[in-house]
Length: 228
Image 1 (cartoon, rainbow, N blue to C red):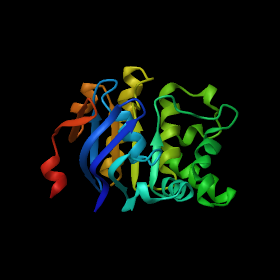
Image 2: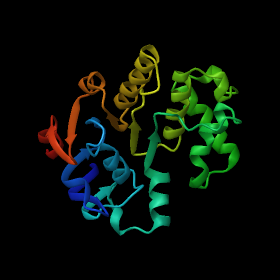
Image 3: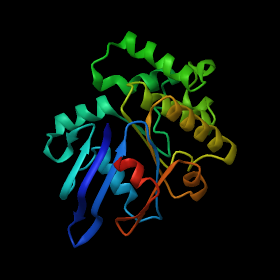
Image 4: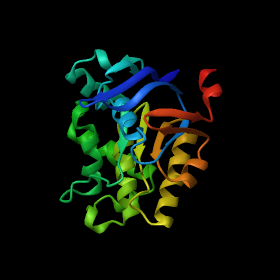
């Protein structure tokens, strides 16, 4: 099954700025993909499109079988809540809430009752090996632990797709290594994951690498596999 499909997708802004140009791309269920490129290459714009945070100005973007450009804002929000988990470089955790409630917030828009949200949050934290930190607030956690809380929050809704935007960018080498080990474990369990990064070492450790420059795909190490 194809989880992400772009056909001649483009994104332009006033003033003739073309952030993404005529991109064709497919990512199948269960793939682990690095989206690589320098600043300004278009990878953040791609993240916004496949994360349904923005719409293309040309072409088609489909996520989990849904045409992003054809959906209303409310249906896009529902699509995100049901199918997509996000992990960002700077965690975006609520400082006054413990790990369980930060993760439970990932189910706020899915209509799940509070008791069940917290139960599923505890299970997600166990999954990322933070069962011993359930009641800790972000100020009591290391950088690597905060990122694992963020990953648990992204996974608690059991999304079809996990988007990780520079997930090790704010971490030291050891903590970054733990986070990437977790990414590989989640992939082995069947999660479809796209890691957006400029780190060549991280990219080299992933089975498929899609390289962007000037808003276009310049290479795709797994294009033949993705098309099959």
